[in-house]
Image (cartoon, rainbow, N blue to C red; front, top):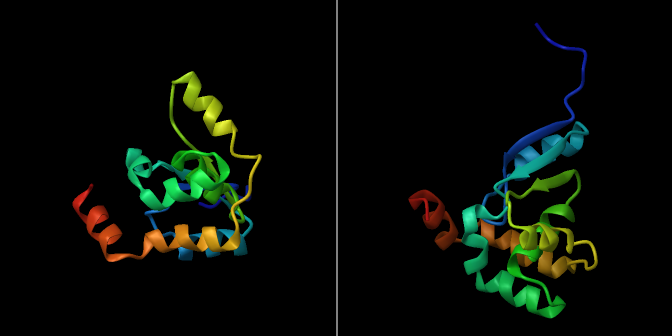
Length: 124
């Protein structure tokens, strides 16, 4: 049985180390939001030098850069998980800057490198 109610969002793992280009394209074409769960890659974001360097340009953390990267994409939203009030506040402080196209591409490049694929395969 199918429903006449349209799908509004597809909640999937998505972050700078997890490529979801085909799914995102499908979502855009079908006007479905892609909701990124685990957008901080289970803490691996904070160990990334590229995200840290980009963040330094804006006075932001690598976590804020990763969240901004997600939110700056068409049809993407994120649901970071925390109960820490300071982290919650930091998550809200991603709307007062915008990543340049070159920075967006540098972050997308994190999805395709050999090291990233090995880390993902090994669960690191």
